[in-house]
Length: 114
Image (tube, rainbow, N blue to C red; front, side):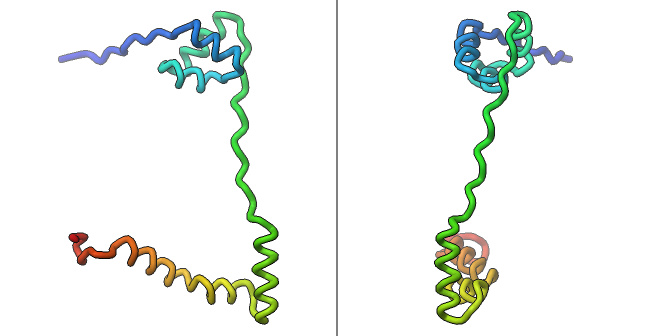
């Protein structure tokens, strides 16, 4: 019966220091060097280096107010609500799903064969 042994992986300390000096955080350095985060953290602690914070995640972009305003203006012009305008231009949820399904299965029989 074999035993599970962990493969020994060595950290390229020169590369790790270069990335650290560029402001990279532990997970980024670990991914770049092909080692675990704990390995990078231990190396950093042994060398009395402070940890860097991970860069902030990009914020989701909000819908363009100008587009919504234009749609609402067009809906007012036709004396309809935004929902009615949406339904008239794009169709109901089920109609949209049907179009997606039809385009995905175009040329296929019921069993997915072409």
